[in-house]
Image 1: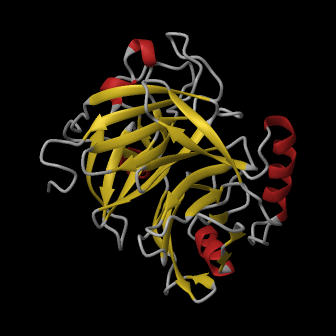
Image 2: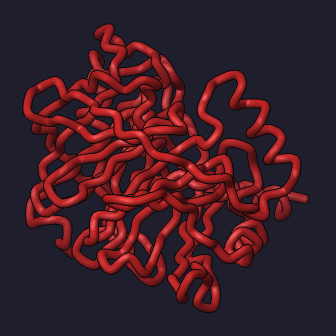
Length: 328
């Protein structure tokens, strides 16, 4: 009996991620409130050439070009024509809950991430329908034809099992022929599909990573506790995949082929300054862009005010770490 109890305790402890060394802190350079997002709830960011783009998980018919010329940014709506949804292979129960939730919160498609290839095509991931919409620079939008094998493999690996915990981030290769998707939580994970003529399919296994369990919120978080590991967005930079880990208040660099974490950086010191805190008991960072000079992180505040009264979506600019993002 004692040995069984000891083993159970050991398994519990090993399921909670506790960092042995302090995670290096990123330095905040600037903070920008965003005006003009009809639905608020900034849930994704992308850089296409010199332009920044955003999506809201409350808007199904438009994405946003960001005017970043001033301290307060303006979101300029760009309408998109969305064709009928394809069958994603998600079970009936999840689809019904999504349909019901759309009447309460708005946003049936639940856009949670946006990314761009070198040709200027934008790709927007719908969490609620596990689908990816392609928005070209000119011409009609279209849903990517995703292999049903992807959803089957993800669910068999413990992902995409729970309502509002499906795809939360997306990244595309510059050539537009490889697509990475982040499953949010319970379990979180990373999947890779590749374009094969008109079909986006698995090259062997779609699943690069699947992780369950919990980890501690950072010590700066009021009443920190163990919460589900999660991914909130993806960004591709310099041959590496970067994950935004909302509840841990950190960015991690990961191997492109395996999604194994190589190094992480925290933004908790700046994000959890008393005036920037939100009353929700979890992190709200949902959007990520990594470039040579630093990181853009977008906050989906769910229309709630933070401690200083600010209710608009926020985008933070952090400096790249000393030695750059590629530092071993």
